[in-house]
Length: 263
Image 1 (cartoon, one colour):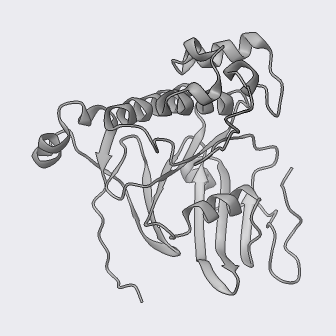
Image 2: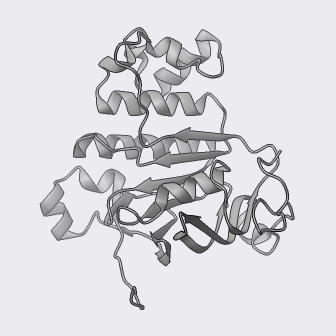
């Protein structure tokens, strides 16, 4: 069931009519935005955004601070109201969400085992299985506040996987993780994507380095500036010299080009 009502008189809400043109070509469409704009205090935050994500597709969203990346995710998920255009989600779509930040009171005792059952309780064997799959089973009885950045991101991935998602939404999933840890996390996300077949919409804070399995990069600066496929860096001497031999296994470079100017 979709999260919001059918488009109302002010142009907000979701369009329940199924997009059809690309369905047969690229597979089932999971979510789409058509000419969507969002305003805060009269200021335009998203300007006429159109985007489709298909089953099994990986899209990485990049852009500078304040570009509207998190607003786009919230609008697509239905937690942010759009002021014009249509947002569509497949009926009964299951979404796994890894947020950019999750503030947990340091004085509130919560183990990883308990954290994985909030807000939805899951059998212990399922929680253990997902932690083992993401390489974090050793964290089961540890306080969430005691985890490293990389461990916490793996726990968040396990929590999202427990929902058996059709779509995984990742808001800067490697934030606060060192470079080699980022490579390992990107490789893990790629493996999970290939194993479970869910679509991926991921926000990256890095304008140049994205997950190598990305099908499409969308560059956002309140409007969609440009889109394109990332370029593999395994044979790029400049990036090999800069990042070392582990770079090519999980990451790729997106060459950012514009044929227009920003006003």
